Image 1: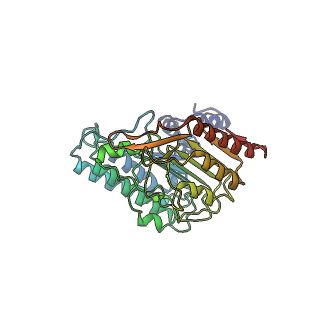
Image 2: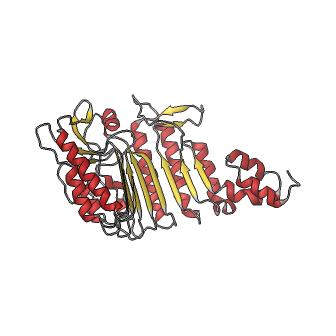
Image 3: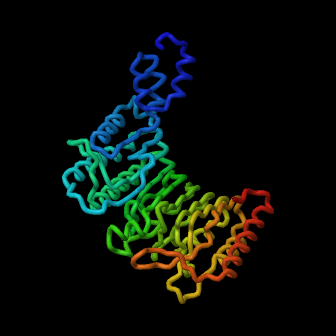
Length: 372
C-alpha cells in the first residue's frame, strides 16, 4: 500500500471506520499519517477506565492531535441495557481515582479548538485498573461521578465552541446545579437528556421522591438553543416539581419527549406549558410513549383531548407532529409497582382523545407538512 496513488489512499482512509485500523494505517509512513490523522482523531472515545482517561488527556495535550477532535464520546456501550447494581460494592478507592482522572480529562476539553459535540453515557460499572475486570459500582460513586463530569463539561462550555451535548442514563437531582444556572451565553444549539426511569431509581434508593426536575440540566434561557430531547427509555419519568417556568428559548425549533408523564394539573412549571411557551418558533414536536398522570382512581382524568385541542389552537408554527400509537395513556402511581396503567378510562374518552389528535394532525396537514 505504500506505493498506491495518493488519491486512492485517501479514498481507502475515508472508508475505514475502526480506530485500530486507522492507527495501523497511520503508522505506515508520513503520507499516511498526514491523511489518516484528521480522520482517526475526529472522534475521541473514552472508556470508563483510568487508562483510557489518561490516554485521552495525552491526546488533548498534543496540539497536533487536539486540533482534529470534533466529538468526544464517553463510555459508549453497544446493545447494553441500563441496570443499577442490586447491591452495593465497596469500590471507594478505585472509584475515587477514576473520578479524579476523568475530571482532569474532561476539564481539558477547553483545549480542543474545534470541539463541537460531547456525548456522556453513564453506566454503573467500570474497568478496574489492576485486574482489568468490570466492577459494579457503588451507587454513591455512580451519582458522584455523574456530578463531577457534568460539572467539568458545563465549566468547559464557558470557553469552548461546543454546540451539541448529549447525556444518557442520568439521575436528575432534586435541586438544580449552580454550575448549570451560571452558564450564560452558551453556544449550545442541541441538548439531549436521557434520564433513568422512576422504577429504576426507586428500586435502588427505596424512595419515590428522588427524581428531580426535567430542567435540572437545561441551560439558562438563550437565543442559540434550537433542539431539545428529553427521554426516559427504560420506563416512565415523572417529577412532581418539574420547574420549567424559567426556561424559554426564543429559537427553539424541535422538541422530543419520550416516556415523560404529564402533570394532572397544568401549570406554568409543567411540560404542557413549556411546549406552548415556544409556540412562535416550534416546528417539530415528537411524543413517544408519554402519559397523563392521575392522582388516584377516583379523581377525574384530565384527558389527552384537552391537550391536543389546546396545542392545535396555539401551535400555529408547527410543521411536523410525530405521535406514536400508544400516546393516549393514563397512569396511576402504585407504591410497589411504580407507574401503572389506569384502566378505568371509558371507551368514549379514548375515542375523544383519538378524534382530537386527528383534528390536530389535519390542521397541520392542511399546510402540506409532515405528520406521522
